[in-house]
Every structure is written in C-alpha cells, then in structure tokens.
Image 1: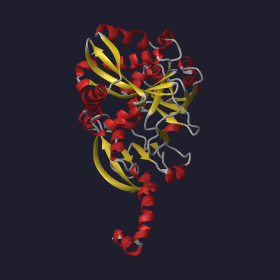
Image 2 (image 1 turned 90 degrees about the vertical axis):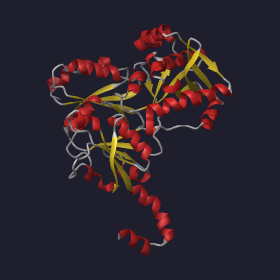
Image 3 (image 1 turned 180 degrees about the horizontal axis):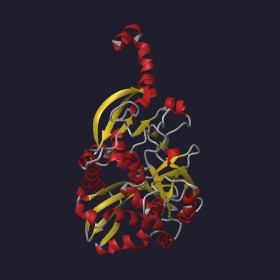
Image 4 (image 1 turned 60 degrees about the vertical axis):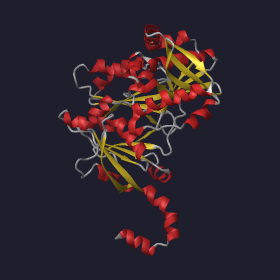
Length: 401
C-alpha cells in the first residue's frame, strides 16, 4: 500500500534522485547462525549482517561463525531501528555487523560500535637481517626451514605468460574456490596479467613438480604478496607445509631483491582466524594502511548472552581508532581456574607490533586482580600500552542507542 502511494504521489524523476538515499537507509539484513553449534547441544550465536552486498555479508557470517554458517532469513530494516534486532526479538541477535555508508558514518560519528576493516595488512621489516627476524619468531627460525627440508621444497621465479596461465588455472582458481566457497572473490585472469606487469611469479616446487605459487607485486620499497594458489587444492600439499613455505620463500626473495618491507596481504581482523594466527607467529607489524572495503564496517555487541561471552573469550580482534591506528580487544573470564596460563598464551599469540593499545576486559577487575596482571606488560611489543577494563564497560545490556 505504501509502495503504491509512493509511486502515485512522488514523481518518477524525484524517485530516481531519492533512491540512493533511501536504499542506504533501508538496508537488507542477513541473519546467520551455526547448525553445528545447535547439534552440539548449545544455542548458536546469532549474527545479523546489514549491508547491500550479499557476498560481503556471507564473508562476515563465515568469519564469525565458521564455514558451516547458514543464512536463515533475509529482511529489510531502517537503520535507525537497529535496536529492534536484539531487543524484543526471538532469537535476539548477539552480534551486528553493519556496513555503513557516508551518511550513516556522519550520523554515527564516534558513538559506539567497533570500526573494522575488511582486511588488515601485516608487514615484516625485511631491511633487517633474516637472523634478526628469526630471533623474534620460532616459526621462521625452526619450523618453516625444517618443513622445507623435510619435504624437499624449493622455489623458482617465473616471468613467462604460460607459467602465469598455468598458475591461474591449476593453482589460484582451485585454491580460492576450495577455501572460500560461495564467499570467494575471484579475480579474472586479466587482473592477474595486469599485476604481473610489475610483479614476479614465485612458484614452490616439490622435487621438480610445481605445486603452489603467488605473485609478488613491487610497490616502491615494498613487495606485496598477492594471489596465493595451491595445485588442485590438494590436501597432500597442505600437509607438506606448502603455504608456510610460500611465505618463508617470499621473505627470502624480498631480502634478495633488497625490499625493505614485505606485505603479507589481507587478513581478517579476528585474530583467532587460522591465517591470522600463522601471520602473527612471524611477529609482524600491523600496517595503518588497511582495506576498509567499499563501505567501512561497524561491529556492535547486541546483548549480553552466554554465547556472546564465549565468542569474545575465544576471538580477540583488531579495530580502528579515530586516528586511524589499531587497538586490540581481548576479553577474559579471570574467575575461572587456570586462566593465567591461557591469558598469557592469548597475549603472546596475538601480540603485534604497531597496535597502539591492548584493551583487556576482565570479569573480575578488582584492584587485586589488576595488580596480578601488571606483569603482562612485559609480554607486549614496544610502545603497546595495556588498558585493563571491566566486562561491564564492554558488555552493557544495551550497547546500541
């Protein structure tokens, strides 16, 4: 009825002018949950992804809930009604991922929610000697060199068109579609050819067989790792440590060519992600230049629930400050027995150069508990400060106003 009246009384030209504004305020909502969590006997985290791009919504659903995330329904909502998604609805939403636009960013300003990039960039200072980098990272010092020796892995550089086409068909396409499924963002061959004009094709060989590769794009004093591929997405190659070998040999190559920075490419801001864990094990620096996507994303904590607390306990994440630098949020239940060891492992496993502040939210933030954790600062990289918070400051019952 409203739609008919809208068409009847609003001239067509005016409707065309109003459409971009209305579509940016009346957004589709994709609701995601995890069937596997329900099968294990507990309720699933419920995530609402608000944005116009279905693939990006699906990507955030997968990041937050895992590969088995399922979109249960789609509806539309006015953006000033976000509160209705977690209040008065069954099941209520635990997390909201809002793809903002210029108007919404202006309306929101700095109020609430965590601003997330689509991709975080981790970098290594390859102007330092490899021995120095290995001292920082046991992964570089021991594990990766051992795997390359054990499985007879080596690398070569190819500069011919035939090798690029072979890499695209047999490595890049199978790997990306196998890893990301419906959320895959596939670049066409023409895009790889364009990048290849200013890049090298690094190929991993097992004995004489080419089994993986990537492009190393030159950008001034930096080299950027792009377009990873593994032959036929074969699980045997992953067991041989081929992805780790790609990063290891790319670092070696960056130093051979005299690049001062090795950019590892885009990574999820959620640090429990397997790729993020691997890159963090190399002790990188987070780059202030990150990919926000066409529209920045705001993460809102919908309401306090056991499943939300469980998620945040297991998923520390990076978010953007107003000045463009990164902070990290880590939530921990310090009333549980043995939490100290787990907390130290989390801090060591997610520490990253370039982060401004680690916000550590505690269930029990009494002065005595705070004093117990003062020693954690020695685990943090230089210039990273520790701020201890209470759960209540991070998890109010009504996070959105």
